[in-house]
Image (cartoon, rainbow, N blue to C red):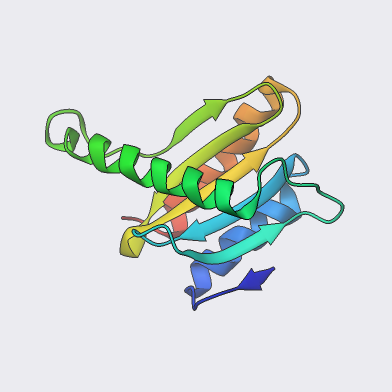
Length: 130
């Protein structure tokens, strides 16, 4: 794992849990509201599909999408997570306290990933309530 800025203890535990307990996880990133990468964890022997610049651009788009979702929260409730499925990966984003965003890339079978995604979401809800 590489830290580019300080993250709190629960965020570090979350990233350790993702890479330690979810074999299909490829990458786990925590970024701030401006898209700055605060913490980046990559599974050993994982080759990234995206360049660093493409990853940063993807983070910024995810943040913009979450900002749009937040505008509807008074009517439909606060967003808990979002999943985007691509041919090669599944990407989950989860809002965290302090305007941070968790960004995880998973590979593998769709059904198994649903269970893995819910493991992540449930851990966040139990340990890092918004």
